[in-house]
Length: 194
Ligand code: AMP
Image 1: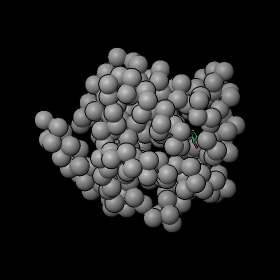
Image 2: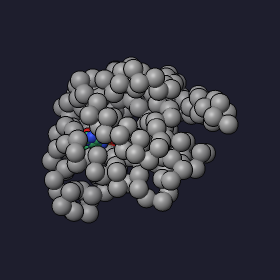
Image 3: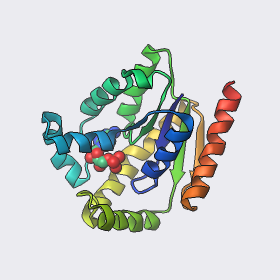
Image 4: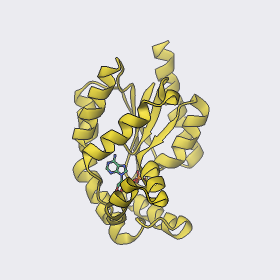
């Protein structure tokens, strides 16, 4: 099962992904985490993406598509994956669709976390204090939200037009309640696929 966990920065994707992967046994494929690991290791890729991430901009599509293609070729992704933070542009979505088509697969579910903007900013500023992520400061947060509205939100329309299954979950509820709603949506899908 290929599931896209979709939503704005600060929408709770990372938190929810941890619950979902545990329950459904799907690998959590977070492009943001993969890039942060590369940057921490100081690899060539990491050095290339670090300044882009620090500004809250998106790294080039072709680069991230290569990263995802390599990741989805790993044996643990044979049954599926939970994609977190990818695709983030329509060209990335088109590249993913083509990649999956070649493997006779498709995007099975888009789980969309819906959270009001003022809540996002408060959450991201809170995370900045707690985790010290370099891209969690007010200026970068504004850039990331602008990028989300301009480049990433159209990905949802792309999947809507393609007739993909989309489940929108109100991500403003408490963490456990959001998790429960996600489980219900995913159980409906696995139930209907059986
Ligand atoms: P995230 O942890 O998903 O918020 O990602 C952190 C940062 O990594 C983003 O602000 C981008 O700079 C970069 N990034 C992660 N995923 C992607 C992607 N699919 N396309 C482009 N840039 C990405």
